[in-house]
Length: 71
Image (cartoon, rainbow, N blue to C red):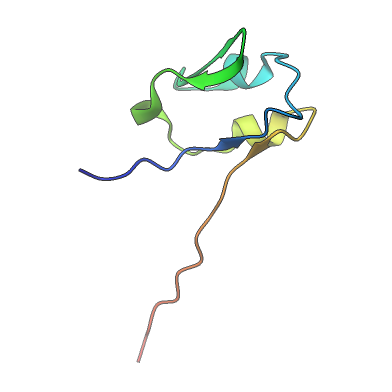
């Protein structure tokens, strides 16, 4: 089974405004009383809309840098 990599939510910054939920094209995230929850984590396509649209900068997408040996 492959591990899911999901955007990280900084709950200390999140105001539960709902922008991430509204803009998620895959409806993977839902804002609940406690904050954003990935209700359909397998649907997240890591598009970055939640990160770029968050007015509080509470969403972070981590990327791995992979070096390919071309020799």
